[in-house]
Length: 288
Image (cartoon, rainbow, N blue to C red):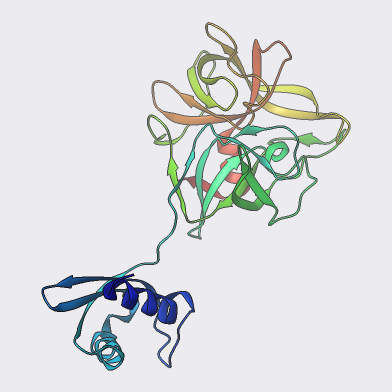
């Protein structure tokens, strides 16, 4: 190892990797070094909040390393870039199957970035605790459960099957194609589309709104009653299949979110969605 690399390594070990702190609690992120003629230049990457301490840092390093010039670069902390996209396969960590990441929201009054899907996807059909890990396929934890609306057993009536999770800050969010511009109202004969984890992009038509349905949630919850359901029929094939639960339903003409898929018939000809205006009101959220 040459002298320049030796110095950079020594500084990294002392000041960066070992979590060096002095009375001003200055945060070092990294160090690099190069030689220019007979002079060694140290590049110190420092938390931008400490820009007032530039003279102090120069004095500190020159005290330890003679004939070395220090160049300070102020920056924010470094994080790995990872992608989270609408239509990704997602689930509660303990769930056996997969659902769909419908989209990204914000909670009114906070700065939280939230992923949205169904209760039965993110909250394991009520069998979850806030803070539980949320997983992206195949086994990547991207966030944690933040809120969900409990599913109510028979004979009570349900309006929505929904949950949201806080997204960890290292994730870059991708709406795919175009971001919806607002929340809209579903109408009969409206042309709609969705991105799902199972069959991707599909188009459909709304057959009915305000419908009453019984949905079988299996051994956990049994049959549940839902009202004000949106009934969607696929165009040129199914609109959604198992695994597409949580997909946002978006009006083709206005590009407004009108619903979120939560159920479908076995052969896939029709599926059910909850009105997104209900979801937004219940959780006090808006599109991100």
